Picture 1 (tube, one colour):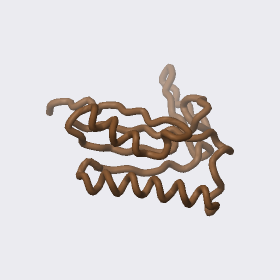
Picture 2 (cartoon, one colour):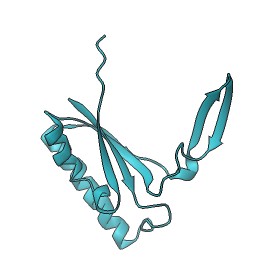
Picture 3 (cartoon, helix red, strand yellow):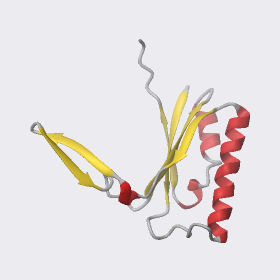
Picture 4 (spheres, helix red, strand yellow):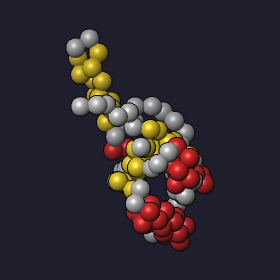
Length: 118
């Protein structure tokens, strides 16, 4: 079954500066988690997202397209990335989610993909 891991991490401004020792250590931890999932054959795709300032939210209300700079929801933690995995069951997906460094300062939301028959 496919699961989407939605990665939430520290609020903007609380993350380590790119290039700092902490940033490099965190990057290495993410790369190790990704490599382990690839090695196990569960990883389908994953990617970090650019900062929240780059987001644009699109809504249509009463036939009018509304564009808003920024994310769709204001939350303390920032949406930092995703991973799409294919696991035998939820227990396996939760095991892999727990290996992602975002769990140390934020959270990883695990959501099953709704499979629609064609």
